[in-house]
Image (cartoon, rainbow, N blue to C red; front, side, top):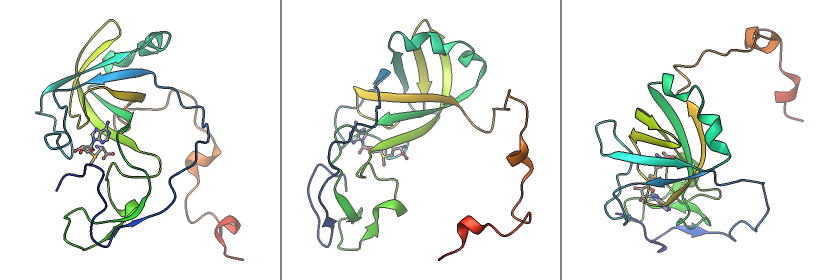
Length: 174
Ligand SMILES: C[S@@+](CC[C@H](N)C(=O)[O-])C[C@H]1O[C@@H](n2cnc3c(N)ncnc32)[C@H](O)[C@@H]1O
């Protein structure tokens, strides 16, 4: 079942988030073949159609060095989602699941993420495969796939800290 904006059997909505400005900026726009949620893949696939990410000025300068990564993590704003459901029924069968146990676009802050394969970059334009968003979806961020990325900054103490180090006082319940 694809959600438009309906509430399904046993689903629970709460008051949607009030407009608090987190200072998010849409830094680009994603062009995809999909104009309807009825057709959009639930999760992108690396052999899926090529999609285009246009990065707006002045952020296009931040693309320096990106071409060397075979895969990128793309974060986007699922702008046509409702944001008020805490319990959802993905199969529309009355069986409900907590929003945070799902990758549904319907969430308080509708951020989508995908690992995409980078085909090529032309100026401020990236050609990628692996997206699952509607045409015109706003771009929030781009990062190298974490499995391909080695920190450039020198290591620091926390990098070597394991769970054995000591009892985490900040984790203890009062
Ligand atoms: C299940 S979400 C997964 C998103 C991302 N891959 C993730 O896991 O965070 C993908 C679905 O979100 C819906 N969707 C895509 N673009 C959207 C948009 N701009 N606004 C609202 N819903 C969107 C479509 O129904 C699509 O199948």
